[in-house]
Length: 221
Image (tube, rainbow, N blue to C red; front, side, top):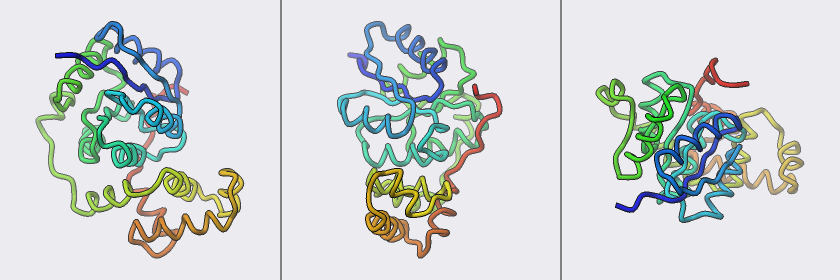
């Protein structure tokens, strides 16, 4: 089998991106890697490299709230598998990553050799989790499935607006950050509420927060 030759590495910590790159190149000599340090940068990388074979995604990066970035990427780019690589290593977090469309979950504490083996396994069509977690997977709730489907229907700009809403920004502040008019933001908010099936900004924020994951205390600062 021809192994993948292009992998997007998405993590906002340069040292860990370097570690992931080392693991990837050791497992697959000659592989091309593209690095990204925010969700917006990941989306840009995917747009520019639509032939990428895999995205390695940290769920604690600028522009994403827990699994929201994973759900968004899977919705926008269903043909590119995503593996979550995170310091949030609780079994329920790993399980939810798979529920929301990840092809695997690699703990940041894993040795480089294990990371490489996991990546190769996913590229060969397998789903990869630490064995003790893989043996105890359950089913995602119907509500979570419905919300994930709704979230994946947002456009990239609508997703950015929703992320800013969860950060407590006002319409005029979001408009300034995105260099658009306040009327444009109002239109985006209206579309977000409709797609998520909610009736207020507060309900949209509460819905989005269900995808949150507590940042690991062991992450690099």
